[in-house]
Image (cartoon, rainbow, N blue to C red):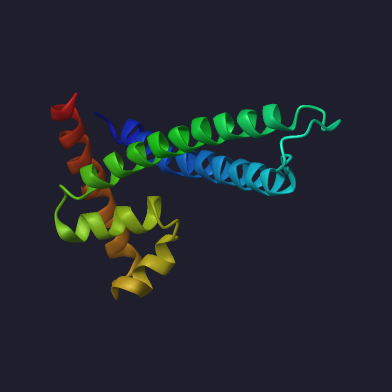
Length: 137
């Protein structure tokens, strides 16, 4: 697998994180709405406009959104587990850039390396990851 393909594969983490955030926002929105919906306690009919349907619909939406979020988290965890197959220094660089969204200057400071060293490690890591992904597919 070429370097460009590996980078595109790693950039999926950001897309996954965006989707997870969207699911979390929607779950929060439904939970807020659900706490405002109150059913009749005494069982006497009132012109509630189908409150029980709203509760059921929201419960179903929450279940679907939670499952979708869980599936996205599994995809992200698969990427991280694959990164963990790299040598430690290579893992540290790619993890910080593609999972923690740090730039190369921040990574260099964090790992006490020069930016040149970070670039060199990254290029080696991308090649190593390409080999790992080639075997995995």
